[in-house]
Length: 77
Image (cartoon, rainbow, N blue to C red; front, side, top):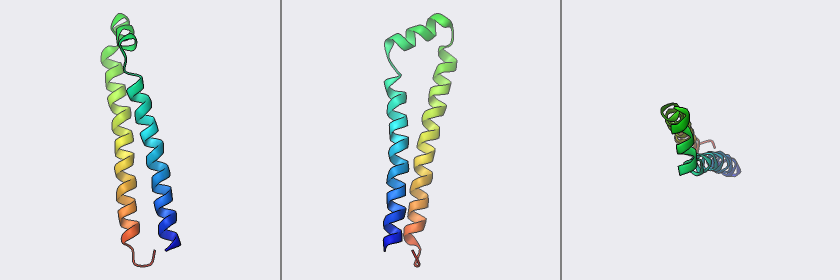
C-alpha cells in the first residue's frame, strides 16, 4: 500500500509542475506581449511556440495519468 502512495505522490508532484508551466504560459498571453510580436513580425512563430509548449505540458500530464493508472492497477504494487 505504501508503494501506491509513493506512486500517487510522484504523480501529484509531476502534474503540479506541469500545471505551473501551463499557468506561466497563460500569464504570458497579454496585450503588450501580443503587440510586441505583431510589431516584430513574430506573432505567428510565438503562437506556434506557445501552442507547442502547452501541448507538451498537457501530453506530460496525460502520460503521468496513464502511468498512474497502470501502476495503481498492478496487483503487486
